[in-house]
Structures are given as C-alpha cells and as structure tokens.
Length: 608
Image 1 (cartoon, rainbow, N blue to C red):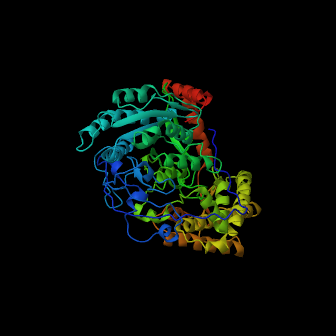
Image 2: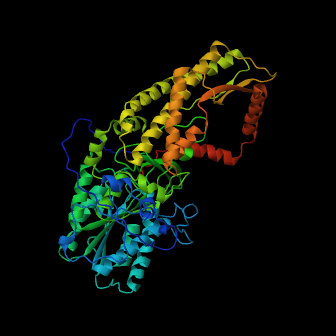
Image 3: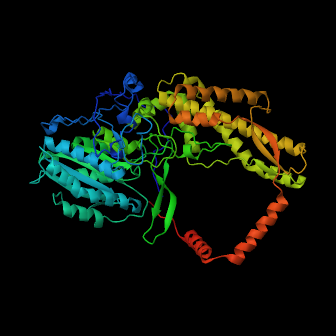
C-alpha cells in the first residue's frame, strides 16, 4: 500500500512561534444513543468529567476539549463561527470496545453498537442541529473494498434515522429543512449525489449501488473534505444552514501533507465555511502506523491480517517498538488506547465535531477513561508539536528511536538447543547467535540514542511523555541486558560445553534467571532498567505504558541452563510414520486445502 507519512521533524532551529492560548472547558454530559455499546464513552469524553486539574490545563499546551451539551445555544449569524479556535474533541466508542464490566458500568446494555451505535450518536447530533436551524449533512464514504460492510450498515440505518428525526418533538425534517449529500473518496473523489436532497430512498440506493470500489490502497480523505466543503458551502452562506460533514472510513487518510500542511489548510477552510466534521472510524493502533483487517473477496477468498494505515494517534511515532523475550506479548503489540488517528481526530476537534470509534481492533487490555484523561496526545497544530520536540532532547531522541523501530520485526532468541551430540549442539548455538549479533548492535544503537535524553527527562512535565520515555529507555536497557547475556551464555557453552547430570537428557533450554553473570557493567544496566520500568509501573498505573513495563519486569533479565529430555530418535520415527500416513490416507479435504493454499500463494493481496 502506497502511503505518505509526516516527514521527519526538522531538528534545526525554527522561528519563534507565538503559541495561542488553548482553553479547556469541561462540562458534564449525558450519554446519548441507543443504550448499546454505541453509548459507551471513550477515554477523552468519559474521563473529561473527572475532577482534578490535568497537565493540559496547567500548561495550556494541549488540544482543549469542550464536552457536547444537550442544550445547544442557537447560532445567530454566520459570523459567529470561529475560524481559529479549537473546539471540542469527543471520541465515542462503538460495539467492539466494551468498558462497562471494568469501569463503573458505563453501559453497554443490550442494544446495538459498532457502526450502528455511532450512527445513533450522529442522529442525536443532527437532532440538536435541526433544533437550531435548517441543516445539511454531507456524507463522505471511503471507497475501499473493506468498507462495503460499513457503508451498507450506514445505508440500512439511513431511512430509520431520518424517520426518527421526523417523529421527534420539535424537530422539523420536511420541506427541505434537512438535506443530505453523498461524496465518496479513494485515490480520487466523486460526487455521488448531484446535489443535496431530502429523498432518503434515493440516498440509500446511491450508497448501496452508486459508490465505486477503489483498490488503489489510497484514501485521500482530506482532499475529499476540501472539495465537499467547496461544493456545499453555499448552503451555509446563502441558506444559513448548519452544515455537518460525516466521514465513514477505517483508515487515517493519506493526503494530510508531508508536514501536515494539507491538514492545516483543510481545517482552516472547513472552519471558515462553518462545517462541523464527524468521523465514523477505527481506533488507532497504539504507537503504530499499521493496523490489521480481515477481508472476504466476492469470490469467497478470505484474507486475514491485511495491514492497513490506521495510526498512530500522535503526530510522530512516540512508541519504541520492541518484542518480548520469554513471555507472550502479542496482545500488547496490537493494543489501542481507544483514540483515533491524529489527523482525523484533530480535524474533528478543530471544527467542533466528534470522532466516533465504530471499531476497535486492538487486542488485550482496555484502559480506564478516567486514567487516560491525563495521557491524551498533543492535538495542537504540528508546528507547536515540533517546537516542543526540539526544545527537549529526551522527546527528540524518543521520536528518533521510535522511527528506527517503526514497523520492524525484531528476532526473538532460540532457547531450545538439541544436544544429543556435540556437533548438533555446536551447530544450533552458532545458528542462534547469528541473528542476535545483529539485534544486539541495533539495541545498542537505541540505548545510546535514548541515553542522550536522560538529562532532559527531568524537564518533561507531561505524563504521556514521561511514561513514553521511561518505558522506552527501560525496555531498551532490559533487552540490551538480555541480548548481551544471551550471546555471552551461548559463547561460554560453545567454549566449555556443559554435561548432563541425569542420564537420558539430550536438550538444553535457556531460561530466565535472577542471576546476571555477564559482568559489572551489565548488572548496572539491569539495575537502571529496573529503576525506569518500576517508575512507570508506580507512577502510571492503568496505562498502556504500565502494561508494557509490567510485562517486561515479569521475567528476570539473566539466563541459566536447564536440561531435559526430548528423545530425538523417537520423535524422528514418529514424524516419518506420520508423513507416510498422510501420503497413504490423504483425503479430498486435504487435497482441497493444498490447492487452496497454492491458489492463495499465487493471488495478489488486495489493497484495502
């Protein structure tokens, strides 16, 4: 999939930027929607009502939120629309993110969630808008093949939603009071409806049958927003309508600009035109650019774990991507913090709209919104983010280290070694050391880089940056200790092979040990890793960083040998017999499976 990314942030001096004051107005809000998981408030909305001052309030350096109020003040004139103020950031979860069991019963209930729940939330937004004045809703649909199910789900609810609005007391939807337009986007954009209309059956048909399928793998959503606003802005200026723009997608968008300049332009144009932007999207993978999706083609071919661009939730990557050794970590590699991708979330925020999470594909832990309230990303314009980054060496090296590991697959060590003969043991030891030598070099590079930020770490005030730096440095140190000890332990075994005490043992397993035998310097490194990781656990409980630190600390950093028996001659006999049986008794299902595997290998993966 071809993608543009934010360019590496300039590390030279930048002009002195006069930073505006970002106000943070917190108000209580009711949950709205259908009573299902579409009602569940995400971290930034549900936690915003929590008491206590946040670092964002104290430093005035973050995107500031204003919660949605049920009783909206009518807008008197077009001139009332603020073109330079930051508005409200609200993320509302869909059905895949159920927090009710863990965090105070924030009701999933028995109703619908996911896309349907998000559309119900939009019904509330449209209702509130109609109580003010005539309204235009422009729907922007992602043309990706993977989005067909979500597009159809929206279309299925269209008629019911508009019917509900017409039945609500005090809400007028007839006589052109509520009009809608349909736009689609992929590599290009298309005006699916020639103009805005109140013909709901026609809209449903257009969404289901009129949107082309774009297999380019590109989602130029910000260009589509720009074009849609240009086409429909007269409904605001001439007809004095409220204008809502709803994006339906599962990716982050590709055309925000190398340094976000396209995003800034679209935000300015959209705000100036008086449009509020909403997005029915996916949660961004924590600290990663790539999320993963399953997709079924029309011919029935099923694809799993196709990579798609869904993150990160920040301007630049702030998470150093490292594997876990000796302990399962797949759930933490693909977790989310329940936030949308930076660019779309900021577009919604600055136009006083809402980012609705219809699907959270993360694995494992879910995080308490009240805790995550103090760990929101920096949603300010990129120039302010860049200025802060350049002003603190710890932040700079963290982002540099995160970039170096972004998308990398780091090898994990082989810990089982056949030793029924000296030759077999030596071969396996040599093979195991080869990839780890490269890994140790990379780890040393990461540790050396992060070490340059230690002095400025004390100057960091934001909990998010504190947790991110400490976790990255602590984990990199811990992995360096493990890697150094691993190579040394294998080298010692090659030089002086250990003998089995128990007759019949034929295998050595390298297991974690509290004892570090790699020297004084490595022991000091282990102590520092312990210090940083324990600080994360103690000071940032209930966050993704604490989960990572806890998992890293769950295994000691030293190594020791443990003997056991596998009986290789017996294993080889059983494998040979099993192979014969497969040949003799292979049935049609196995043949079909083999044919399918061969067909899949020759078939190109779809671009989503």
